[in-house]
Length: 448
Image 1: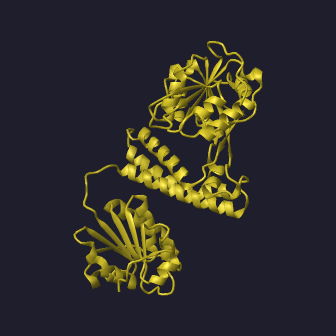
Image 2: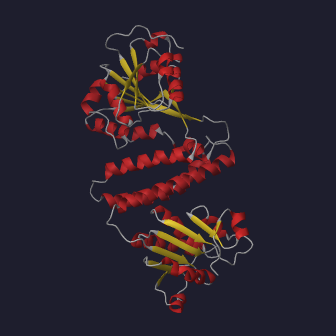
Image 3: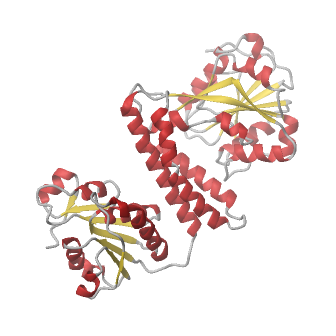
């Protein structure tokens, strides 16, 4: 239990607004850090407002622990609505925003008082910490390097509401936060357009936990990607611009890998390897979302199949299963021109690439990407080899279902391409039961 605030005037000097949704333990840590890290004189004239955004858990315990905090509710879901509700509930001339999962550093209120008049908007710093013991997961390692680069945000003209100060006059002139978009960035840019000034205050610090698992990171970037597309989709050439941006997001894996490798925030090669894997996964996933958004909703189309196989036994096994495609439109890609005439199948050619001939890899990726965009298949299936793996990766990016059937010739262990495909395909089949069991694949009989 912390001591009550010193007597607060009817109109406080500043209101600290904290939105909350079903995160009692972190809110408890946030409020405890805010009050125990402040001297009694720092707390004078400060109102703390927690805006509950429809939590399903009870707030009785935290209300009892912090009687000096004002708890109000906002029924409309979304942090933007909660922050607007908090701002409307106070007449304080200064509005200071925190997030419930942040921990203000000791002396945060004193630092806020010292920083508040530096600009119309003051972007405080956000550091990262892990809530779990070492070693970091890939998600935690990734966030340690890339999350909350507030100095860069400030140079771009915005801050984050995890640690943001502004004035009542600036807030009223700009208008409330808007939902369905990156509300803090959107609000700051609107304020800047009205002549508002912004600065970065490194001494005004809060600590934010790194996200622990892939699901949390996935949800964060799914939301941010959707919000950014909502903001951009009505601009001229929006779809073309968004497609180009998707390509840049995917390509950013290369240069940003250097940041991971050289970062002094990570410990040892294991953390760096995990961060690199998460970097590649999240950027390619985001690129896939963006490509699907750029292509946009279209009229219902019949489910189509894109079947990819190299020459030899891979192609023969593909031909063995084509009758199972039924009446669905099927398009074929292969690497050997003679196979089309030999089997009477209308197939398009793609360059072959393997460990011995990776020089064809860029051309293979480009042509497969073109076929994905042109055909928009519902299902992509491959019987091998490396071009098939690339096809499955690209298919995941456009939202298609993917199937890999490893060659029956791999009777001792799954092929290298198959072991790669197992991580990207929705269904990975081996044609030998013991091979499937060893590789963690599925077995449903054999093609030949």
